[in-house]
Image (cartoon, rainbow, N blue to C red; front, side, top):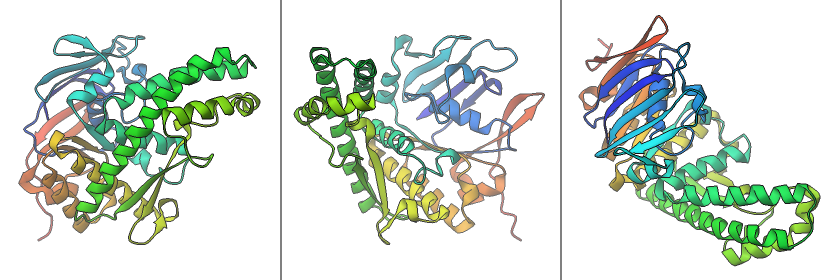
Length: 364
């Protein structure tokens, strides 16, 4: 749980300090006021580039450009991440320098944002990132395995582009890729198994998806030995292409609406959104012992009052912490006294955050 959160010169927030009690946090305000900036800061308490996939320089508040900082009390740890102007992002845990992967070991942070709405109909790269975020939530070491694999593959691809044919140059790199790739495959498979169990066990207001991992070359070599053999036998074809064509870096995440047997890519826009919500909720249920933090940006606006109420019931039943954003308090009426409420406004280019009472229904 995030107990306190402090932002300094982070995007539109010059200085924001907040305290939370573990209940869901409903945040409303006009577009551009800084709601998403607030939950984006929370997303940086996990490995990676946050929910907008931005670079460290993008978080710097302008015009000051002094650098930025996010600090939080997170599950009993003091977590800080920051960057000086023009410098890479840094992390500190309990006063000591740490890696981003270390953040995943102390908290599980999941999110669903509007940019993900086209997940099922766009390219495989976005679905692969989504799969890896799911996997990382279950297995923090997945991030290190993926980094090891990417580094070795970049070096191998450089040799391929330079048309190096001597097998001696490839063997050590391919051994590194095979070892890291096998770990990635195992982590992803285990994550889908846990997710599938959470979907099957739940009574949810949202449609149950069946998930599978596919590869454009057919069956993906899964073990270290099979990957190593695939890299060795595929060198000639990879040389012609100038890149590595087989491996965990090319997988795709397939989803099917289980009750109807319809692929997610063929569902309506509303159905695709419902499948995404179902997956995020299932991910949180599967991690209930770790009490995950959910970041749900502008989600309520896409649901009618009945579906919103059922979503809020499921979120509260999870027992974790959730941050929800919307443009007005009427979107959170169904939460009642089960949540904390914040209003974000903008004054002279600076976000201002204030606590509010629970919104009241407008019905007579």
